[in-house]
Length: 502
Ligand code: AHR
Image (cartoon, rainbow, N blue to C red; front, side):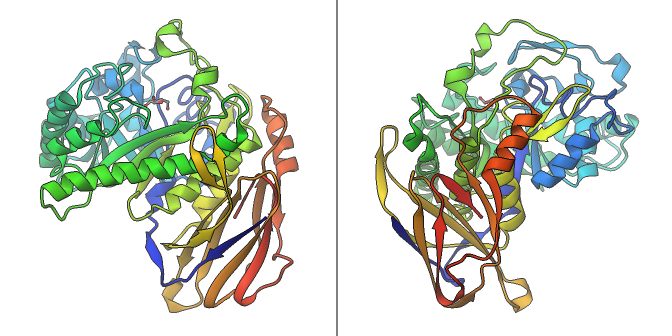
């Protein structure tokens, strides 16, 4: 089979915002306790955070981390999670039915992010709380000395404001599972008022209104339209959440997930632009795709109301990933890069232990799941501007998404100081056969210097660091310059069956 990809550095989609390579840490299961934070661990720093996890986070290349939820945020009282730890009381987190020990809160997280050079993205509770608590949290984080909440932060040991720029106005408020779930009118009005107050505290912040929890929600579309009709002038972004899974071994549909994500983005953009057009507004709402990943939600997750009340950092949604899942994650990143003009922020959900690329054992090792590698490589290589490629490829009809192309591609061009540019090219072969890709680049000498390839693993995923290392050894390889040669005009590369290549 053959495909063609045409590229030119003057044909551009838009700049790649580094916040596209964000992730997410929620108070769920072992994401925080025995994940990010484990004071007794052999690698723990003086703050109780695991250095082995911090090292892997750096290797993953995460630029932004969303916190503290997720569903957790909708019943979280942030004031109870600041101040002396010994005075903080455990509480029942209703989202995941877990006793939250309350030892990591706003200050601990923000200081961890600062030490790691990561931009934090905070969420406020618009489920059980409202305008005043949201504005107070912005003041606590970003206010200068001389007012109540900023002074409380200073009394808690942090003089300098954190300067948190990105703020989510609640989480998945369209979902009936959400604590304090609302209809679009109730949420839209509340989000507009909370956002107004938050920007009055700090006009420099960016706000994310909740979009739909998935494209399958029955309210999808009308939710975005109604919420934006209230919030258009105050918010900067609308959120998108999407999880994909291999259902009943339907590999073609699963491998086509990136096309489903692509259509989802285009529908949200169209809806946001329609609201803007009706208002005769020149403002463009962009997307914070602040939860995306492979998650075996339907096939492995029991559901919130069926969870027993647990304590001591239980194992919740600790999905074990295969190399096939890694190829799909790489393909989802191709879709995100191809929407660089409208998706400045995106978060792989999540980062540690819960549906995560980084896994840990309490008092034990930390390791990489197969989904780690395409994320790390894309975050490392996708810089500068995303190029507007022309891709021609055979397609296949899938049960879930109809026709999807068998080859997807994205490229970025980093033109450093007008010297030779750096081209990064990402290619996915979704078919079970090898595909030759003719890469045409008129007037541009392209020298492909090498890359990384991940092959889908036909073995089922098995738990543990040894398996993860085995999968990496079998499925991940470093590529030299392509054998078909380099030079002016065109280059041919052969993609292995069911593979992701950078
Ligand atoms: O990431 C896990 C959960 O998925 C989040 O808490 C919620 O926002 C979404 O439904």
